[in-house]
Image 1 (cartoon, helix red, strand yellow):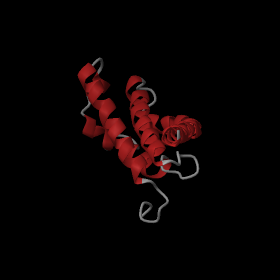
Image 2 (cartoon, helix red, strand yellow):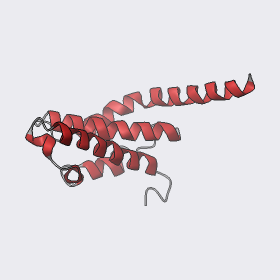
Image 3 (tube, helix red, strand yellow):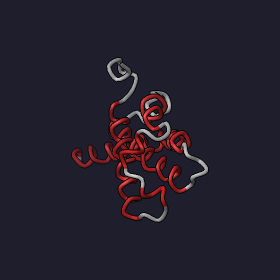
Image 4 (cartoon, one colour):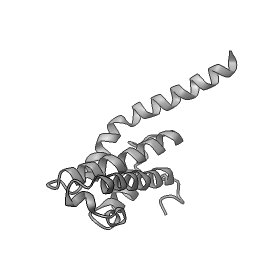
Length: 126
């Protein structure tokens, strides 16, 4: 319903899943401790990943606002959240910390995306 109303971004949701899956597969290959050997699909039901993905990361005020920025923002939340969760078993809900961290960097992500678009268009002008 949030996607249909235009409040939540499907780009952030999909990229957050992709980031989490990518990091989980990297951890599965590394396999340093028992938390790294958890299959990637178990992370969907463990903890609050789905809640964080649907309701927290897609906040339209604090998330990235450009389309490419939303892909980067969500992917990094998925990766960093899983790193926090797996590397520090005392903090099992790393998603909220990852969202807060990326909320700080969302304007910077948008700035670099806009700057790359400006540079690309300036090449066509010259």
